[in-house]
Image 1 (cartoon, one colour):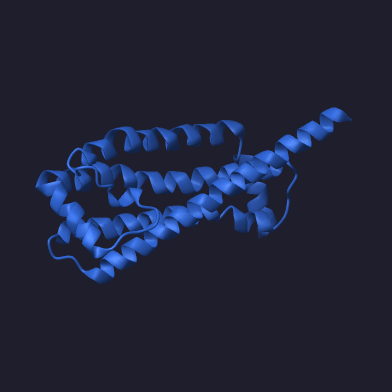
Image 2 (cartoon, helix red, strand yellow):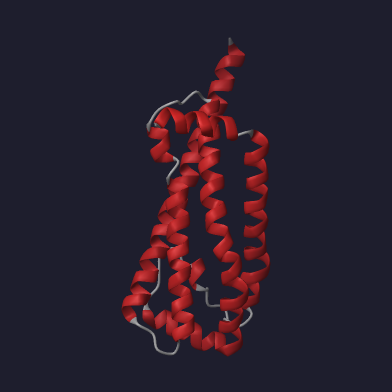
Length: 188
């Protein structure tokens, strides 16, 4: 089974596909960072929105943020920011998993562990989706905030941050190993 998955991923995981997915993922990310988040932040009086709090948040912060955002800010968050943030996690998970596979093949790291490591971006994406669902729930139920939902959504934010960080550390490590391998080969 693992060999079949390995063969399929190896055949389909070309540089062009990975590069195209990387571009698509980062176009969506760029829209989020440079367009939709700034639109919401116009209403926030300098408070960071929930998506930008990697260490989580509490019910008091959420209440203060939502009050500060006002009806227009909450509407912008729900109907302009969240839709793009519902596209991004899936793209992130797929793209960065394929990047991990691609880099692993380039350094001949052909091991069962790579399949486990390649799940890191998928988990980041799953936690991002769960965080988004929590934020949607909080926005639609405001001013009735449920502390358990806030706490759960905050935990999802922490999970997203953890797995995103592990993803990028993995990619940096694989890039370092790939460059080291090239340097060694050039010295021979």
